[in-house]
Image (cartoon, rainbow, N blue to C red; front, top):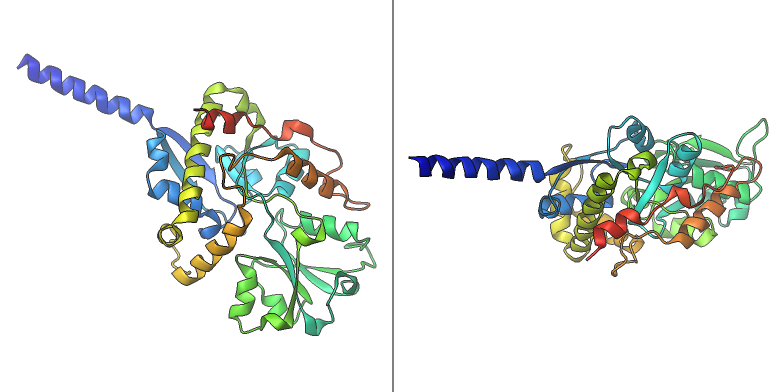
Length: 333
């Protein structure tokens, strides 16, 4: 009887220890469930987070959700955000720090109908251009500033249309150009029946104004805690595993994305096409995947500082805006 009681006690103690080992992590995504975040959903579906001893909650984003605000309110431990909006938020008082960089190329473009009279960037003046806000406008404003085009005031050189998260202004001829991503909105235009030959695209990568997009950000003060750094290190390592798996097993990754989409508004074909294009933005698939390149950080800062009379950020945030400590901790052998 005593032996049985002892075994039960040991079993309960073991179960309690297992439960305690699952450290909670909440990640706030930048947008709704889609293949843009396939690596996170794959890491959860394949049990990579669980194997790392983590209980991860993946919170979808949306048009009314700003990752910086969620982070500032302690609604998440880490967020997926674009560096322009993260650095702008940092300068405004939210101490966001880049702890990992998944995408190392920009997927943002301005897509225009040639029938609108836009064939080169010299044709932007006098036109209406659709732009996403909520932090996504910063690369655009910086680009216009570098072209010497005013976007505000009594007599702007271009009229900025606050674009919803769709391409309706282009389809309805309300704007000559709209903001698109190579993995999403561009294809919405094509699916609506517009021929590629009737469009001209201006990828930010080709305009010399590319800025870093999907990176992982945490609050600076929390990174002073070694336990938090260790927990984030586990999260980053498992996330990198998820992305590696997703890129190599795209059909399976698409199923994980669709399973996370409670709205059921997408299809496997759409998400597969999206993931194929997302893969083009993750060219660093070697042993340093997810590690921020300081030169890419400096390039982004340079673009944001060069926005004419009203730059996105007023001063270089310096090396305090990023750290390799989390990545190094997670990837340490």
